[in-house]
Image (cartoon, rainbow, N blue to C red; front, top):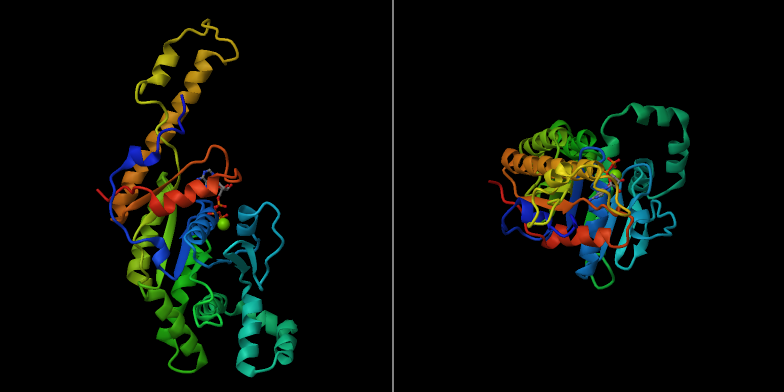
Length: 339
Ligand SMILES: Nc1ncnc2c1ncn2[C@@H]1O[C@H](COP(=O)(O)OP(=O)(O)OP(=O)(O)O)[C@@H](O)[C@H]1O
Ligand SMILES: [Mg+2]
């Protein structure tokens, strides 16, 4: 038996045409904690670089996870960013550093900015002020998107943002709209306006929700898609369902778990565990497959969106082929259409 032989798409659905993820300039990956946002951001970067694009992945969390996924020995990328593999640069956007850069650009000098940012009272003020981190971080993304090369072409063809998990991700995307509606004029409003325009331009920006085919992530993803559509106005045209268990048994023996369970434990087979142990493992694979299949359907139904299925990698994400397999599934795999 090889449960890896069965492509997940075989299990879950028909093809439906979708624009390529690589047509956009900015893809913001979000979803509940631990669903695979960082993995998807890294896989998308690989897919884009293989298509000849110059890619920037912007990490927003505390650590630097994408570089470790892309290269076995990855030196820190920091705020300056670093090309980690050919065609893929990774940057970690620290809001305080982005604020310093922005203020220095506005004032034309750096040293008073550094003094202010190092000042305890100013830091306390910043800690209490809502929204600036989100606005300044997205402002940095806007700025990176505007960077050009000597020939006038964009410095990066595609920017992939590894955004915070759902709740924080919503705040991140909602702040520009709130600022635009609350502030009438001035540089704050101008910044918020251009960031908001970037977010709501469907040709430019796509939000990519990542879910697991389980009950809670399904519910939360459906709510996220609903709020994004109605509150933020950002384009969402598909849901990525990660870690989906493939059909567990070959077509010829669809009831393998039941067959194993019927064998007496006295049936000894060299180098194999007892039949009851094998039956329990096989049963687990089937249960997981069926759970995933059910919630893939629910995700398509509740969001009304096509679903892109990424297989569970039994070998682990660190296996040299894993990200490539996920990159292929992201870009070219058949998709389960909303029923
Ligand atoms: N398709 C997959 N198959 C097997 N394991 C996976 C798959 N995708 C992700 N993982 C594993 O799941 C865990 C969570 O993945 P990842 O770090 O990408 O999630 P995340 O959404 O970015 O998490 P966080 O919310 O903490 O940032 C990691 O250990 C990763 O290796
Ligand atoms: Mg992550």
